[in-house]
Image (cartoon, rainbow, N blue to C red; front, side):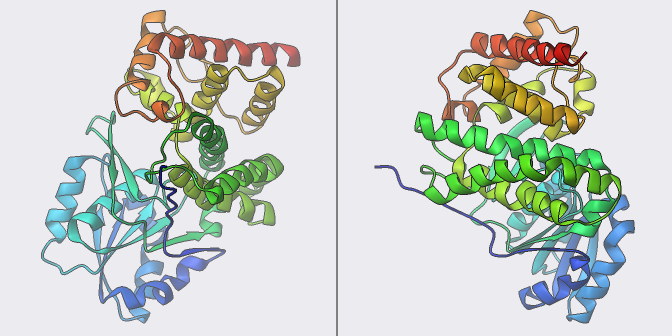
Length: 368
């Protein structure tokens, strides 16, 4: 019998203006911190974080994040920090910055604190990084021996970020239950190893419920730049529930389709991770043979959040069958997550991509 495995960060803290109390949570980790952020995020919160750390007796050094979450970027930052006796690495910003911070902390054998400034993915809580080439193409997953020591989410920062990022996070999180139930049905393995626990199943299912209940309200809250109970619920779903759900419950086709898109060139690479996962989720529903009513439910929410639902929306309106097949081939490559939930060929994936596009356009035609 396969082992059931559940993993999670040591601590999760979420609330309005909680960034100003980061020193209270990390002061006991050690006296030397490395802060990794890009210039935009640094201007936004750098001084607040360093002031809070200083008040707790923690000295902070800054490392600039530039480019991609690539091997070269990880090596560059880790090498520069190797002599500073770093006790804790604090990653601040979006998904690629956070994934880089996790890898740097692993290289330095330091504690890792994750401070997302947008709720655009479920990466913050996980013990893995998505590694890209310097050109931005998906390369591999990098796994770690433990999850972050702390994930700290300031919902005021989330509310002040562009609404597109929250919508992208909702799309990423909406894939959680779709993929976990596929892994459960197929008997596949999770990102944590072993098979899903009852806890992971319950968390993934509740994640979807929260997003359908409060997703649009949270989206409107961010448009108004206000923190509301709906936003708090959706930020937790995007970050904690989806993070625990995908890692201890498993990924399947939706994220494999996202990775498959990196095989193509063009404007699709200007889309966010969640925007590509949104379409990948529709493709997974097509692969599973889900009902029209279920498709319509997802498409309606995606459209309300201004997320892509057609090939035209993901900048592939003129893609040839050969191009779509390339996505199918990349999505079914050895080691891809699709194999945890499906036994399918590249041709079947290509057919599902084309079908998902048609189903979405059928729904849109009924609205005219």
